[in-house]
Image (cartoon, rainbow, N blue to C red; front, side, top):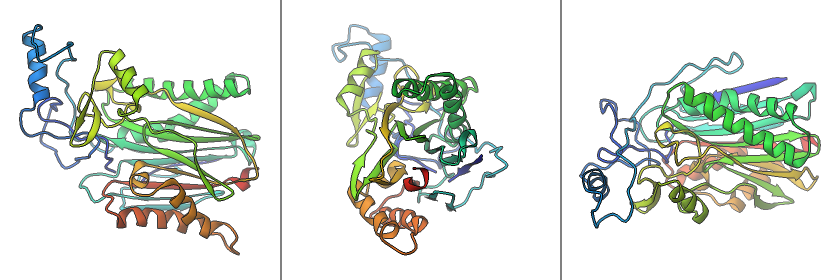
Length: 357
């Protein structure tokens, strides 16, 4: 069994507020990220928090909102213990693996690379069983790094315990995500990470996500999104958050949980754990020959490149050609997003599904 977990930073989900989301320390402010907004002036939301604490009868509030939050600005890179893929803090990471390729590029923002990926091939000594993941960190590197090193293992452990029905596999993936989340919270880190994973076992393709990393499959050239982004603007996510006593607020044109976080599901985010869920949404499909390849990518790609456009560009380099170039396809997608103004970290993985049928 071969495995890989690599550093591949700065996500558009996380950027702390000096009023509502006040950090313990403001000495390191170089890791700004649009996922978590920074407000330099006292906002109406901050006044609302103050009113909620001091005057419960304030007409400005229809319901009591949560107390002031304490959100970190920057955290340091933790050590990656994977011997197969030591942590590297580079502007670009590119790997051509067995049946997959991945290309990661650090965004223009200052700070560390916060994206990670993982790839494990040869599960249970079966060369066509594999699990892959893309992890987009926010607020620092630790959550994405932890997920890249542990989520695949936790999922596989759960799969072994349960039956191999679609329902059993879906429950196993859910338990794997939640176990990884709870283990990370015990470490008392405060960062978070969006995740998308793809498990290939037998004739099944199992795709899951928590956050706004996305999986898109090429079905005979037609792009099909297999995941749905978890953003606070989704009506079902907004309702879930409000039912739990939180709220969703638009800041600078972006809907955010408690006015801070621009995703509604992720691993970690201890300061928002009451409202941010780590439970994934999972889709189990039969692995058909018409499935040509699978793209897993962080929102740095999808914010600038459409699903079909991504498939078209990758397909030109991977199908109907004498020598497929999946790594070049990943690179071209990243470069296209950058050329359109992307400043976030971007990670793209292309999985050649024909290798696993």
